[in-house]
Amino acid sequence: MKRFGFSLCLLSVAYGSFFLYARGSDAVPAVNPAIPNQNIEISYGTFVKASPDGIVLSEYNAEKDANVDVAYVLDADTKLTNIESVDKIAPGADIELSYAMFNDKKMVKSLVVELPESAGVNK
Image (cartoon, rainbow, N blue to C red; front, side, top):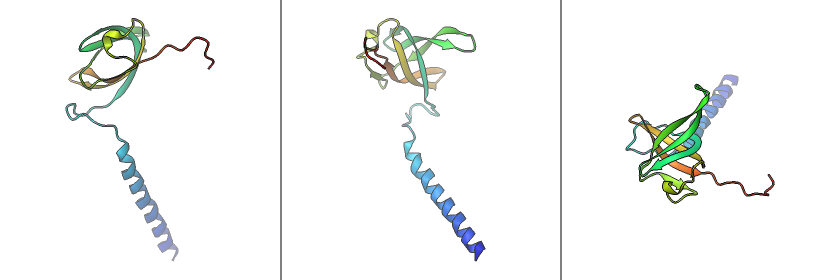
């Protein structure tokens, strides 16, 4: 009887784990079918320059222990936050973006221009 109870308990845990795993798979971020095997990464930097199809940020590189300029590619699907277009970004603005690698290029998925903190606001 103990063996039956143990088997039933083990089966219940395995069954429940399967459904928790299957249910959690809905939370996977949307994947652009045009970009195979994409892994979304996050990056932070300071705005250097922009063009209609790209942006350059100055980012800290730990291996070089220095800031380096990194180029990113923009497309029609890039979501912009706190800015209307990249040509409106002020020099030196702090930028956070998410990107995916495609053909050795960093394709921007979303770009957020960090807003300056209001003077006199307590944290």
